[in-house]
Length: 153
Image (cartoon, rainbow, N blue to C red):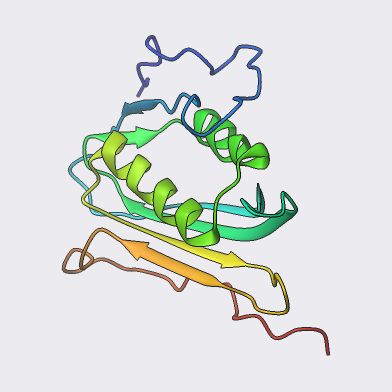
């Protein structure tokens, strides 16, 4: 089975890092198994953004689970989109929820959830979770596999 990639602008091409999440191009491809109930997971264990107040870097382990409908996110465009946050100032909650909403708008998935497991800032780790609703009936949904922050020791 061949996937139609004719409309993609980034895959297989030299692509400059987007300057912001707003200018990043997210692309999609047809789902060849739109008739099947399954979860696709993307894990970004080295996600970075900037504190909107201090400009200092913030770090997170992001896990995105979604049940595709007619579309799949093209993974290079997702990597470039997530990279665009490196110079973007926003609070943890804003980054996490904005990613989930942007993917939902692009893909119209049957279901999507995102977990943002943020490393401590000022001694307090912040975990942010967002989803589109209840998962579909009969879906096998694994744990996101990221333990809550326990510090060192």
